[in-house]
Image (cartoon, rainbow, N blue to C red; front, side, top):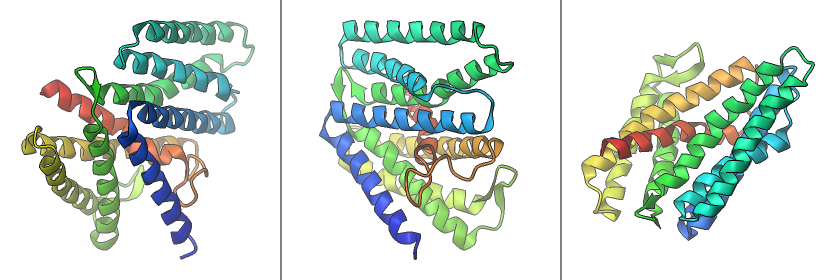
Length: 271
């Protein structure tokens, strides 16, 4: 009970802010993604610095990630000039990172650059693509971003409840010993059920498409969670941070989304 109250309050606030950001307008959704990129990059680079002799500058490299996001976001909004300036800044940032390693006397200079760019590939790229996927014919549509979050939250909730109640067969014991096949299929079943709600609210998208998207989301989100578990196991930590009481860090909350975004991208490409 001591853990339940802060976990509930944190989760409720987290969900409310994300839903409000998605529904308000395209700018508020962009702010949500910018905060997510900054927080997740900050946690990832702090994990690396705590367990490797790399000394990554968290502020500068988080700023580099924001430049990539801003170039994509401005392009999606039709502001091509601003997009070009932001992307040019990001390219200069890449060159600066690599050149700076020439003057780094530490033996792991190349490893540091690899961790920096992996952070952008793992975190910044999918969240930037997420913003583009929220636009149709130049206009912002909130239904798909909201659906992706709801599918993930539904899957997480019912995979946990089903796994705790019926879980017997381990899904990936080497990486995440608490996950079970029963939990996976329980989350999948309820997520498929939630797709009927979106089909009812958004009749312009066929039910079969919502079902297909929800199924892909569950599969990709599960892999996203397992990949983050692998990262935490590599760094020998339980949570990516402690910024969210009862939930760990921001990366712990966005890990499934990072891969689920690719599910939506695959969904769009197949259509």
